[in-house]
Length: 73
Image 1 (spheres, rainbow, N blue to C red):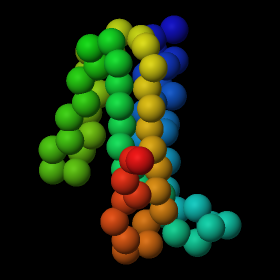
Image 2: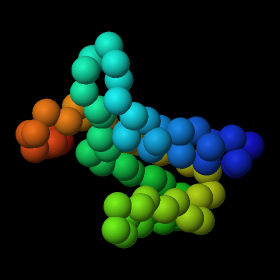
Image 3: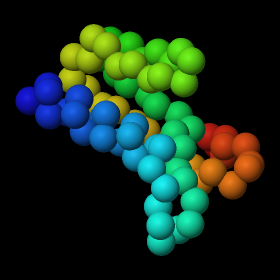
């Protein structure tokens, strides 16, 4: 079950770099929040997820329009 959850998270992350033809632009990850001792690091453009022990993962996408990511209210 953990592998499936982690695979889903990785799939969401990969979606961040895939162009969406219908929309005409790419979506990029603005914010990723993990609970339960998940460690997410980003170095040299590579995102690594380690030590995930279940829990909730929240990923916020924003369209890449040469703009800043929207801020959380």
